[in-house]
Image (cartoon, rainbow, N blue to C red; front, top):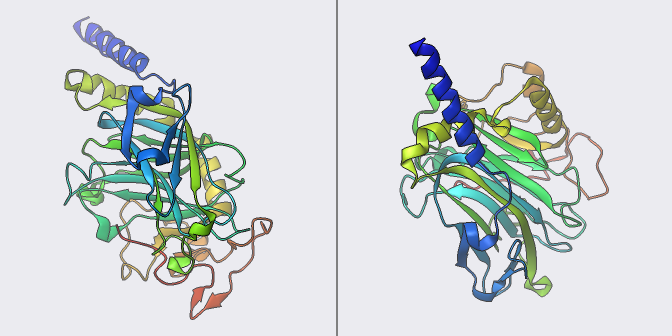
Length: 337
């Protein structure tokens, strides 16, 4: 009888915590504050969306007022069109301001391109300052991200990180013992920025930001902060359970099937198949049992079949190589910070 009462009390706590994790988007000033950029951050009249601009003078960005110890975080983003090479629009979690030498980070980085070539999206995971062991992946997008907003979201729990685009999972990183401190575990704030990534963002820095096309503007809306605020430690245990049992954190077989389909069609680089950059090191969380999947990638982790070409050129084909590497991904295209 006593054990039944304990179980009922536990589930009651979970339900209370789950109810507190509101999926509704927050007004900007309720959850965020400006990080940098002066008047290059423009708030909408109703305070529920914000435009970030990059010009020759400065980029811009905002940051959540609270740090969170796990949760679900989402933003709808509409990206600038035309020539956007070198432009980086980021939506991410980080604690680099608190832990400058051993920070954690979970990133969406949206990478601009030349006129007529589509945006790329890169996901990163760093734990405890593990920037020398970058866990990057890059994907094409199955839509034009400049015509309307699309949702980019992260579910972060003590056991896994799942990246979502328009509600569909595109990457799952399950925490395994071999990761050690490389799995993000300290409270992080939520950031959004636009900035000049000329040195690396487009074909390894071959194409840089051209400020003749400035200002570059990215619109953020539907801002969801649905997590365990680190200042509310008295309810943290209940919140952790609620976050782990919340729908975005639960990867069903149907979700995993959808994720695999996305990755087969749109993933152009994964660290899990990069045998050159890390001298054959296999990251412990990578599932590379499937030999057929491994055969779809070059030894430096890039797809043999997906051509990141012109926006209208969506077919799959074998990539042409230049000096042993695909012409679409020159040496130095990845960064480690």
